Image (tube, rainbow, N blue to C red; front, top):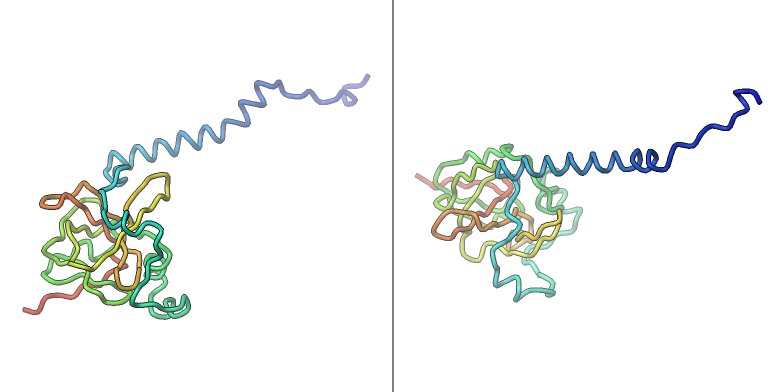
Length: 194
């Protein structure tokens, strides 16, 4: 028998099994390390969420909004980045919005329908990279449960057009203890007249 006629040896079962599981184990370890680093940095919210009475009341009921446009009309009215956030529930990169550093007196309104949402009096620096508020204006926002990314959060949207704004967490300052963590691209700022 010549050497070239010898059938190739199959790898042992334990070597083949460990070789096949290495990429997934490595991916898991990298993901876990990244998640832990983000949690330590305060960029990942707690896995708990504030209790919302309106979540229970509206569970299963389809929401109806005053301002309704076709998808094509929303695309015309919004920039591509605004569309991604307001209509596709996207998230902007932290520290990318000029509204994060907006400190003048005024009102933050929905970029989709101009409904006033938050007063500058309730804005605070959460050190997360997104404009944060401890309370919305009366009858400005709606909420619903968001279970994406393996955690339960409370999604916040414009009451009038349903545009996605961000999420609310229970780690904010007094007097409410809430942190409305909003996407700056989902809002516009209207300075208060002098």
